[in-house]
Image (cartoon, rainbow, N blue to C red; front, side, top):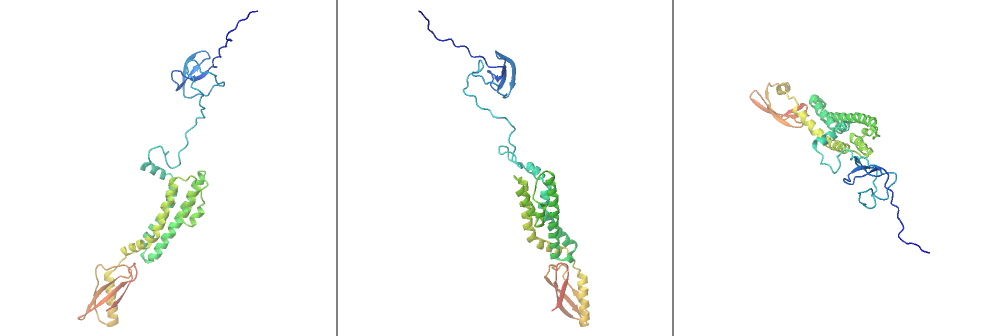
Length: 291
């Protein structure tokens, strides 16, 4: 009985099925494999993997080892609202201006205290007879009422855009209170929202200490001092009290702020007396007495 021995025959592995595979000459693109030979058609990018992963690479492609797992390719993550991506260039003044212009109602609420201060100054200049305190309080009221109205407008704008902002009722406290609630409700809040809140706080803190001195200075600058009338009135009162006709001379440019004093000279029948005039307020009212 005889037999033969030898290495058992190994059947060749079947080629991979037709599909797109990395080009042997340029791995950055895909080339069509017909199942038996490379075709002439190519395609850029990464194509979907074939239904059956071949156990060996197509002819001419070196085995790179385990193929890396490629996740789904999607759009890049959106940047943080209000600023460009960190890897981009620093924001320019033009970019910041365009971003700031995107929230006009928020900036309008922020400058409401400044508007109130300006209204107080205008009232003091137009109606000095009201006095400083009345002009200041009127300006504060106008700033508060304007901030409340603009907060209602801003609230409706944000609701129209699909947001759930802080309620405008916070503006009854102050415009900055509404802007603070607005920033806390918007997550993440753009930098413009926080900037508007900060501006409103600064203007509010500055308007209170500056309102009275500024309004007082406006009233002083617009006070009307009728020098001729004052001289006639003093001379007439001296003649009525003493029976002596006098001529009164007052300085041409006396101080007009409340509490200031200046001297006038009354001359008649060879006598000279001094008259001290005291300004009662910034509207031009005065009192006088002889020395």
